Length: 416
Image (cartoon, rainbow, N blue to C red; front, side, top):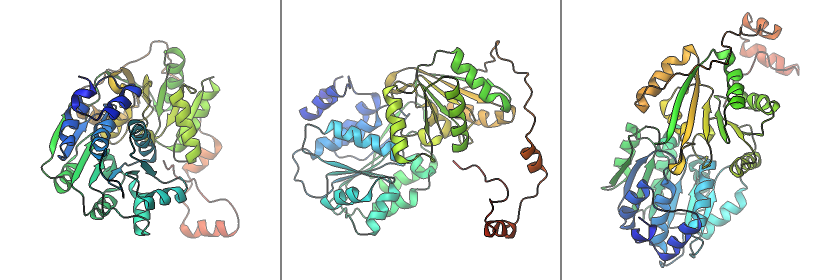
């Protein structure tokens, strides 16, 4: 079925062709007809299934030809990276219309964002925290905003944005049309949908909380101290044109990126220690194929839209099963196929079992015949040996050490 058959404005149909959209995905074909009539929509679909165009196209269609003046639609996203990609898609779909959009996120200069808000551009794509800052300063009002989209609603909750979202909704007295899109539908999000949506049309593509079709999953049992060695082996011995590697912390990501780069791979990093410009450069380079490997924390589990990723490798087992679903959703996008590997140590098997219950399948265990699993862990360094028997310093000791100008006592904990 072509996009024209959905009844979209010719300018939007033309834009979909120029962007390479061949035909509507299942979530687009199901959600767009409801949204075109102005009906509220709650949609559950795996990542990579085209949810962004599913809410942007009906918004743009309904705004074409309407009187302008003041912001008419607000799209909330949990991360800067995802908001940037939504904004980019919006510009592409609206290029043959007069509809204007603006991006409001942290990590970017506030001046241009405030100017766009005060000018009342048609569509605002924002992260909740930065937008609420502007609202509290009186930099914008949403008196005319009739349409609200909550994208990746489960992540908005996971990241603690639910109170901010409710405060923002309270600032939209003219809201008539609300759409909620999510990869998973935990009870708290179902409750939110019942509170903010009016008689919504329900769209569910695939089984809730399952992986997208086309992703081949496998678990690689390995001792913790050999995970890096096994990853290096997989990268060297397996054809992987474009690989996204997940680690638990930013420190592990930085260290692993150096190790992989030393093996001759072109590597990019994506984690919270990188500046906004470094993140943008890494994402653009990875998207263009300048880097074969991207090493990232969970900030890339949602919002990294790169269609050519062939492999996703998790070097740890996430504690939250939904995080795993979002990680592997970075491959197999838009109907493509991909492979998802997870390196699992013995003490992570329980967490993996929870993931398997979530995705509804037991992952095959793979042991490589040409990898030595018997290698012993390296001996601890003198600092590690000393740290094992060292009591945690008190707050008073730490304060005394800082007052004397010395380094902090003890080792800082890893933070993502």
